[in-house]
Amino acid sequence: MIDWFTALQIGVAVTGGVLAVALGLMGRRPSDLTMAFAGVVALLLIVQLAVTIAGPLTGNQPTGSLFEFYIYLISAIFLPVGAGFWALIDRSRWSTVILGVAQLAVAIMLYRMGQIWFIQSA
Image 1 (cartoon, rainbow, N blue to C red):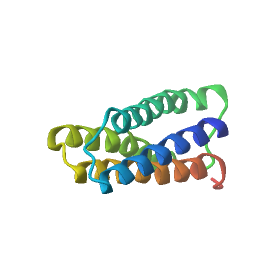
Image 2: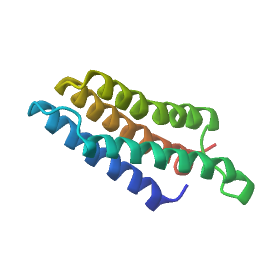
Image 3: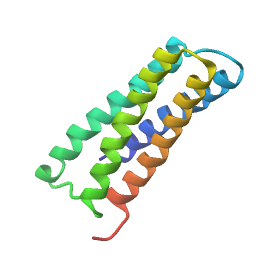
Image 4: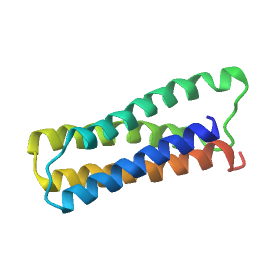
């Protein structure tokens, strides 16, 4: 994992999350923009999955528990996708809020994953 890539992921997740929560609280239904942010977050997480699988092969070893890391990663991949599908099915303002909260939860998971990969001692 690269620091700037993690920062990009967290930035996209926080921006999309805050936007979706704000629009949901204003009474808006899920828009193309809020769904696009959820899609970009999921796409970046899939790229991260590929990079972390190849990372140990290239000498980029994590400093923490790989089990915990992959649990966060898989949860983070499915959370915005599930919230996005629910937002499309429900099409209410509260589904937009939940979509935003899910993206903010993913941002917290990404921060923790960065700690596991770089900061913790094995």
